[in-house]
Image 1 (cartoon, protein in one colour):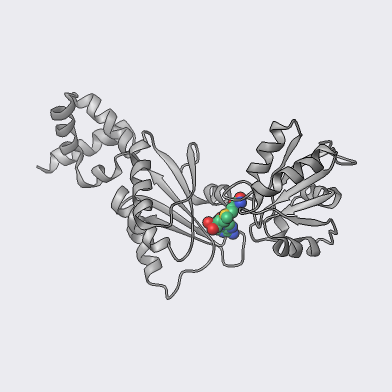
Image 2: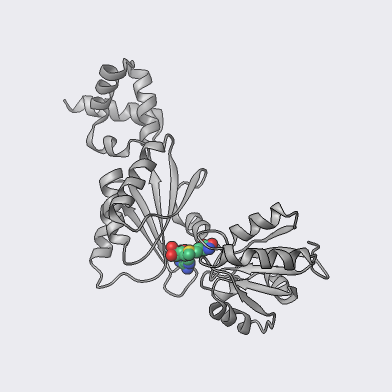
Length: 289
Ligand code: SAM
């Protein structure tokens, strides 16, 4: 797509605000204004946004349940040279939202697909969370059934070899339960951040251990609003909570034949601390005896 002038034919994946309408970009407005039509997750929801910005482009519906069925018709329009914008209710289309099925089909058919970036709840939460952002994993929504959720978290813990921040989307009526599952799988002391109502009037960040954030929510009459949950996933965090460094050094010597130096290296990695911190902690524990 050129920066100025008429839009090139193709499919435009357009991000929309996640709360604050000022987060729409100038380019998003131009694309929405100039497109032949806008495929929306919920036409009524998008219409409010379009009315606010006096955009009169026709809309058509494209949601989770009709995306596959509508794709052939939209592809035919794209092949005939239309410019179609795709938006979800909020944020980036395709991120825990519809849009990817159509985008993949368009690419397969040789149609140009243009991203029009903007707000996204996961990244917005991450950058202000204080959690490490060098490496992160976007998980999206956990399963809503308790057993499946616990299994998903256990699998995630087994797969996590290095420290990283895991980003979940969660519904307010499930958050306390999910924090309970996190505590069971990653330990009560695992660090989390709950980002609520991002970019809105009641934006809030709760930071602390799983147990602390859970207790803070449990005190409230009702937990409301949209939320992103971030977990500072330190491998073996649960074992680390239960064991002192000296116990872990002894266990690694016994179970894996590691000498003290290699054991400290491993422990530092497991706990997301430096080797010298692990060594200092070992000395401190030994000094205690
Ligand atoms: N496509 C969107 C994006 O790019 O972020 C996400 C759509 S997903 C269906 C909706 C979920 O995103 C919500 O349940 C919540 O977890 C998160 N979310 C969306 N807006 C948010 C906000 N303003 N504050 C916190 N979380 C938000």
